[in-house]
Length: 314
Length: 319
Image 1: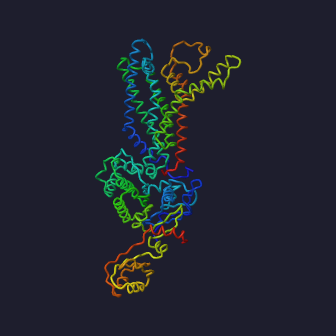
Image 2: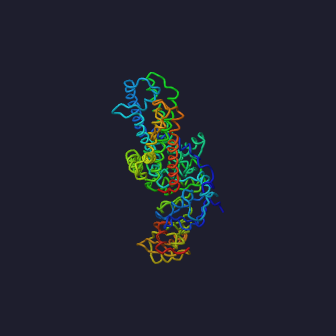
């Protein structure tokens, strides 16, 4: 089993009467992308701040890379890169000046810092505008600058709070692509988001938050199986005798349900990807296959369904 | 609790100080203040020189007169500084901490391997050093203008007294810097923090003297008309008025720049026995007069800073 990067035990944070994080047990392993997902105010940011030692937990314990953020904040913060929600910069300073300040705060020697900054800016595609004041930057550029700033620390763990917040869909896609590349370099990534569909593709595992509790945890397909029952929906466009086709599709082992949605359109619900079997069955039943489409389970649907059912126990 | 944490609380302090100082020295705000201050120095010194030439012939402390002599309608240099130093100090710090929150840079900076201590103290030091640069510049400007226009070099004691006055100005500014920093921790809006600092300054400048005069007879009433009672009342009024940094500053100025001043409170006849009236006090004696004032200024600066430190440590970082 891979090494534990983040581990919290019974982690709790209260602000007066409000319990922001409630007995959280979170485990994140080396090299994975873990998504903290949930609506605003569900305790994601508070959790992140406790992981960084920026807020003291009310009770419970945290280990990040083997350190306790409340006792050894410097060790944690020098190894972890953190991109806050809607990150801000010193507007009058250039991108370069903003990062060099962070490099100095990290105690990087000048020459080393210059090399790392150059590399990081290139990696996020901002080397052209390094000497422009940040005031002229778009939201997407700021977000990428924030990422560059994290990279100069050469972190083992990156924590991103709502990284796609305020980005247009194209900008969000590009940014997530950057994150995916970082994963390829062996960096562990923890990210939070309230837009489930946007980040589900890059997360290996997710934890769904609701009112300070992590109510669901696992990979997207695991969660789909658990909550939706059937994780995959296959849509087929077939010309032929409906009764025969439905019968053939229902006969495939693993198929849970078949719906005849429209003339010639059939939907198959299954626990696995049964496209090949479905095609074979349709053809054998004498149908003419015109098209096939698979709909992967969406986190949004899992989330909504979970709460419709009133939160079924794990 | 802090002692059980790893590393020095001052890690990254100099990075903060250099960055903040660079910001101060290049900011438009600072440039406006510099122009204002240069005008002050030029105007008051020009007026003082004219007055000195016309009125005062021989004085062993000719150079110190540059600071204290005024020609209507302009106040003397020290008077203007009593007004400008707080202004500059407040301008340097009123958005120090809340500005970081408003720009959403606070969590990014504190996510670096530094403690909050370094950020707050770095900001204070940067303001303090910037203030020092400004004050030294004006001081040199005044001395230089004096050399040019008076045509005589200052004596060693004059330079020394002038330098101590410079240091006193700096610590007087330190109070207002610490106060503005405190308000920048307390108030989320920089404008509110600036206004609050100005309000405190105005309170001490305009109203505190009056309040002290009202309070003193209540605390030390004159019941039988004895001289002791009158003296006690005057001393109570003085002690109360000295709670104001402005009063401390003006008394320090008085003792340092006008060596003939023998006491800052009521002077009794027996204290003047054997004294040659009008003869200056030696520097060491003038220093004795203002020593409590200086410690008072520094102590209140430290107190205010400590208060903002405690509040900042407890502040939640999430904006």
